[in-house]
Length: 89
Image (cartoon, rainbow, N blue to C red; front, top):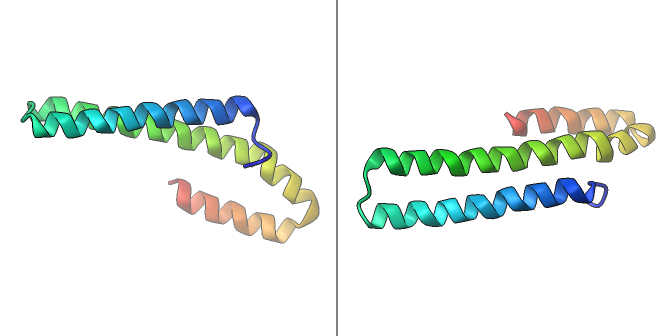
């Protein structure tokens, strides 16, 4: 993660913190017997925030971390790209 631009780190951190807040809200909503659709909407919000963080980190990794590795070890980098593809689905 050392090669990520600080704005990418910051954006990912903000999304994760917001997702954590959404998850806490979901827990409270469930405990309070809140209407199911409202809880589901809040869960979707948390998932969206985590997806946003994942995409930001993935883009940063591809554009900075892997581009540097590609120069040094092409085969290992291609294997890592395949692994990332499988994980990022």
